[in-house]
Length: 451
Ligand SMILES: Cc1cc2nc3c(=O)[nH]c(=O)nc-3n(C[C@H](O)[C@H](O)[C@H](O)COP(=O)(O)O)c2cc1C
Image (cartoon, rainbow, N blue to C red):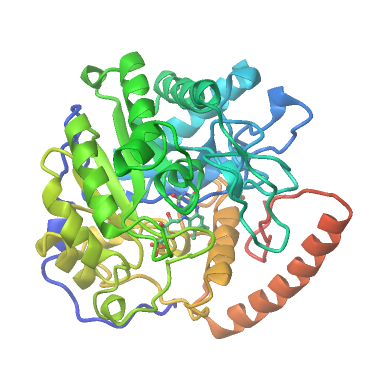
């Protein structure tokens, strides 16, 4: 029996079942968001663009589980808009050079799986920029030529020209958004957080431009607004297609995006009519999904104190907050305190893909309490990726309609001991492979059931 986070039972959980109304027309069945998590389960074949970045049946199986978990909104892991700017090998990709019937069919299956129990299904669209691994691109595009210095894992970025901002970024986001619309998704989320290309533009640490895309807050967020407007030109709000954004509320880096910057930018997202903004924080240099600060320990959500300051700028744009939620009481508190309208969940729902369903039935007061080192982001990330891989080994039907079938229980000490040992071996293997120039998705296949 999995152990849960200790907490008092909540008698106000029903507030989490409230609908949220997007200004372009769609309504969610509740406040829960399955936040984006990279799955690394698509094909990686850069030498053959037609078969590069294709969603696999395993990826569709994963959403067969989340699509029965009673989320209001389900967002995929980052889907890349450019075939040689990825977050990692195994990312799903949508790009004009890779157009094929097989690709369209796989995305159609994916959107159908996500929406099975009434959730809205969104693709998260992203461009890796300078955070593209060097094994994939030695000279990735970025806002400026500021290199990400992490043990040689990232190449020397090249600043996009104004012309390339249109052809290599904006046009690619629009192509992917149109594709999402045509293949049955309810909308898209533009990934403007965590240090990927769009955050490289909004953050002064990586944006040293002196043209209209650099300098003032307005200039740094210009690229996001241009993407939004170009998407809306092709798919107007009157279609009901949802367009949202994930953005950092704060970066805590010298020169990084500040709370004041975020407030100023969010005012403009509200004016432009974004359906929703999901607040997060951090970059590769400064990952922030950790329980380090005292204020966070008390209220769980990592960015709640920032969300409470940003929230008043939003009137028609719905706010989601993601990061740290583990107990129903903290989720209810974040909604009633006015910090957020929607609750984003990531790691808790790889352990338990139908956590919202159980919460809304009043069956559980909190998420499964894994005993991994909560201050070691990499380990918790790998554990979630392993659980996603386990979800993908069979469809819901093959799993006897049990969404948690075959998922490792990391609240169990013996399982965690075996997992940590498996990580060590996996790290050695990937290091050896990298030296041999072999690029493979960084997902550790661990125990569970046979595919
Ligand atoms: C395995 C894993 C993959 C992730 N991939 C993405 C991603 O593709 N896009 C994104 O915006 N955030 C990504 N995140 C961040 C999560 O969406 C979320 O913001 C973060 O995990 C904090 O939420 P949590 O405390 O509920 O896990 C990822 C997180 C994990 C654990």
